[in-house]
Amino acid sequence: MRDILSDLDTPFVSDENPMKRAQKQMRTPLPKRFYKAASVRQDAASGTFAVELDGKQVRTPGRAVLALPTEAAARLVADEFDAQTEEINPFDMPVLRIANTAIDGVSTDTQAVLEDILRYSSTDLVCYRADGPESLVERQSEAWDGIIDWARASLGARFVLAEGVMHVDQPREAIGAIGIHLKMREEPFRLSALHVMTSLTGSALIALAVDAGELSPEEGWAAAHVDEDWNIAQWGEDGEAARMRAAKKRDMLAAAALIEALKG
Image 1 (cartoon, rainbow, N blue to C red):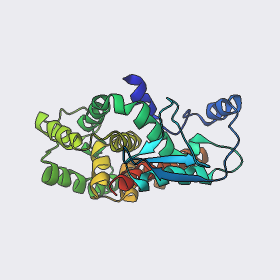
Image 2 (cartoon, rainbow, N blue to C red):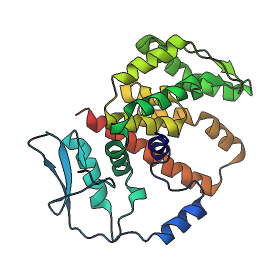
Image 3 (cartoon, rainbow, N blue to C red):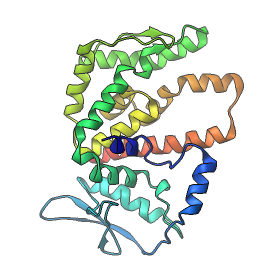
């Protein structure tokens, strides 16, 4: 079970430390691109859409056929294959990584992933507010109050706000309401993408709001980085931190794009 969640927590970056990441990639040479074109073919029996390279089915690391529920979702993966140049770099293929994890791991234990998202909601980012300075308090309120209001009105989940980092117990009814909502999104691909957005933002409520269309992916990303953006405005931004943030944003947008494609 923990292996599944570990794959989801860091689906696209092999190591947070860029030096270690580079060293790992150097030790494992990337495979050369061996195909001319990627395509999508529907399986008549299952109705799913398989990704093919030069007409041959792609398989996951677990040797399952790489097939997704909708043509639009499969096309996202095919486009990632087409975007590869001389080498195939899986770290530049976030939708492929989500799909592989969904098929090989999440599909065998969706409950483990659902429960992990629930754990995030019990200590959700948007519930913990700064007690100062006033400019940061105002930014948090502007970005997060609407999410709290949406959760109450649309999900029936009333969350308690706290100042600072002291833990506050959320009502069982609120967590239960989130659990019911997630149960309706228990399909492995969607749940995998939701978990990716949750872990990248630190907020199950932001992820669910993006999933529901209450927030755009860009708005969700901005809401998750209110504190960080405030600090950058005061002190500036480190170059390597900016590159890491850009990579994580790419992964967040890819997860959101997959959710949208699954709705088609």
